[in-house]
Length: 130
Length: 130
DNA sequence: ACAATAGGGGAAAAATTTATCCCTATGCAA
DNA sequence: TTGCATAGGGATAAATTTTTCCCCTATTGT
Image 1 (cartoon, chains in turn green, cyan, yellow, purple):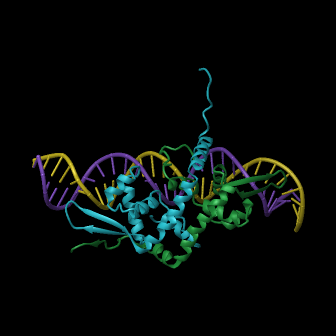
Image 2 (spheres, chains in turn purple, blue, red, orange):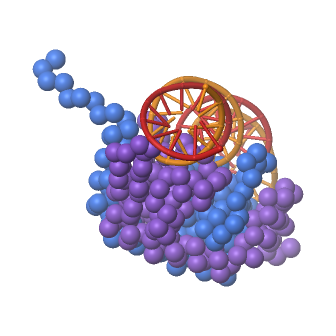
Image 3 (cartoon, chains in turn orange, purple, yellow, green):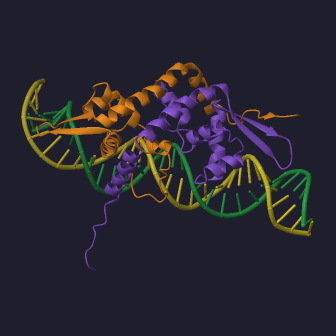
């Protein structure tokens, strides 16, 4: 989150949760941390499609938003562990609800998404009274 | 959603729901439609910070993902109404969970977010005198 | 004739987010 | 000695998303 030209909306609960959860990998980071995968290298292996850099950045944002805590052990090679804060733990059930909906509708969603990707000519809009 | 250079992940439920709900205004669009605000101009008034263009685009994506249905009445001036599909209705409780968490933690989130912003923006040191 | 209305869409610019590349440091194993 | 694992960061490029600007439809009312 850099200097913004476009101001944030923080009007309602949806804006607020959006602000802390929006980010390509954040939800997954929270999820994997809640599953006990706490070290950066572990998280990287769990989320191989993300670059190391972005994971660091998003972890730092999660930390700034007090959803995760970071513990640095002063050893060499470095050792770091992330854990959920008490506050962070309260968001896990919310994430679970998201994931459940996705899982329950897995096949359908997969089809719809892939289909939408390939459609350029668009759907036939339903026209009333023609 | 144009041609992508970076492939989608559609591995788990979280990926899938992310794919259909990701978009700055989509969740709000679904929410307001579920509240009975169905016409584009109404939605625009409800979400004045979004450009008309993006709302159209995101509505079209929601339509392609079968979360909303669009009815075009062949009258002049044009009349259009969006409504949730049966499938779309199943995602409303999920959105409600998000919103509730945000509302329950409203004050805290607001502080955390504004605070994090000023960290990365670099706090202007208060200059005494000058 | 012309504005107002209600809805759309193309092109390009701006904003934002992610990815890529290269660098730091230490200790251990081959 | 080289390579690997650990963690992190700066600079820059690329990808993606959103905004801005301008144009279009067709009818009704002034």
